[in-house]
Length: 431
Ligand SMILES: Cc1cc2nc3c(=O)[nH]c(=O)nc-3n(C[C@H](O)[C@H](O)[C@H](O)COP(=O)(O)OP(=O)(O)OC[C@H]3O[C@@H](n4cnc5c(N)ncnc54)[C@H](O)[C@@H]3O)c2cc1C
Image 1 (cartoon, rainbow, N blue to C red):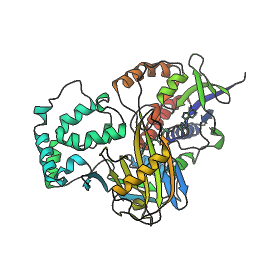
Image 2 (image 1 turned 135 degrees about the vertical axis):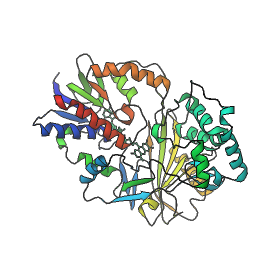
Image 3 (image 1 turned 90 degrees about the horizontal axis):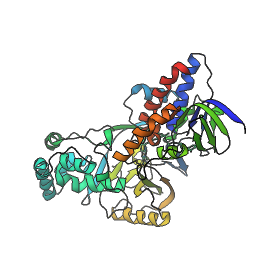
Image 4 (image 1 turned 30 degrees about the horizontal axis):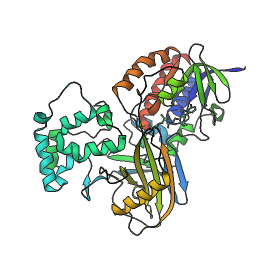
């Protein structure tokens, strides 16, 4: 058996794998070093979940992907590598469909827009929340919602919406399961907002490349030599003791292995046992739908908390891009083992789009679907315990899980870039 030696074996050509490879090779080049690096990618194309589909006149991503960079240097670095790409900068218009009305997002700061009886109930429960739900140390995500916002707000939106999205019992999630992506606002903010509305959030303004999310992937590919990428090749197993990795095509010995594949799969490949059910996640079935004429021209996206409506979110590409025809993405959450009947789901989606008056006279002329599995990982106590147990073992053998699914976290592409750039910097001294 031939064993190919490589300094860095990177698993996955998504944003994380590409960003790591790009940064490491750039740093090495500066100090005149030439480490061997290979990215193995199971699929035939790069991008992971940041792919774009172009069909007829429509440009769709794997799901609504919009970008808000907190680090201007990262955005500038990417932009410098996409000089011919036009970027739109958009002021977000997002809503919640509640009792057939559109309420401004975030829900908790706009309860004054609800029907009066619901507004009074939400306000009452917010005011008396500490009497009904005293803070306790052993908190869950669901309890945190009741404690911070009271029963009215939690039951009207935060719980039904997140149950649809995460497809799980919210009592199994850690209170900080959404991290910085949870729309902030305490009781004082909510009451202040009744008088002076301010719905700023982390993504109040976002950017979007005219060519779709894949343009950021193309930017990361910009300075990578093509021989650094091997497509249609998946990592199958890793021997931690002798630092060798078996792919679907060959065997490598590595100094360091950087993996963006989902953490439970990596642990399995390394024959490391996580307790059963330590890791759980949801799936998202995404429909991209193109119509012959325009629909509602205001929203960029709307959240649907009602269990009577199949989807949890609908977004309008045409309202972001000023397009002449309605171009939607529609997202449905499911449990990790759910088997979607895609044809029936599409019929149900069309029915619910009519019921919600999003589709009236428009005709569907193009469609596409994709299932993201995993989509949102469940941040649970058991998952955190398994990570704490196995990360030191992996690191000691030169194996580094990264990215949204490797690090088993809720994050954006910017977070993926920050994380992998920092890791490459750490290795700089020994490239
Ligand atoms: C519904 C949804 C909406 C989102 N919206 C946004 C947004 O608006 N803005 C934003 O910034 N981020 C958004 N994200 C997050 C963003 O998609 C991710 O952070 C990013 O794409 C993750 O990149 P990654 O490289 O870490 O993982 P991935 O994209 O999953 O890439 C991993 C790669 O590894 C490959 N792979 C897996 N296993 C193997 C194996 N055994 N061997 C070889 N290759 C393998 C896969 O084929 C894949 O190409 C969203 C995510 C979801 C699910």
